[in-house]
Image (tube, helix red, strand yellow):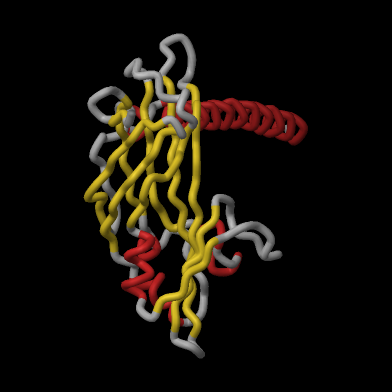
Length: 236
């Protein structure tokens, strides 16, 4: 009798264990299916239509009040006037002796229906703004390449007594040669993308990490223009 009871209990436990494994397998499968199904359903942001650049798009802390393009024998010239204010955190850092970096970027793109768009010309202008607490003067340096810690490279420097005077120079771009003369073909298949922004990549590494995701460091102005006879003035 005892042997029968023991055998019955063992059989019942084995059966229960086997059923438990089957139930566990079904539960795990259901969870995995739910996770995969959720991952495969695109979010509204991912499914949103891609927006083409707005010809008059301006962004945080300012605006582009004048924008002109001139085709000359020497190349495609860009002139712009901007109006912006430095974010409060940026100005505070400047007064503490931390240099701030800015960059103006221009890119000419040719649209291609059979392939991705092709970049046919691009140019950049880098600016470094710093404050000298001892002399209480501002210095603005400009170069065609990013500034390096070694100090190598060619840059143009100017000194100012007031921050507003330095910003006034930064906010004006006059006849900047952004492409060779043969780049603009007048076909209407080309677009110019321009932006002026705070260059966070040039800041000291600890400051870069502390500003990640903080809106108080945003400074971006942009403009996109389709190149044609109406938007590019040809100079004889």
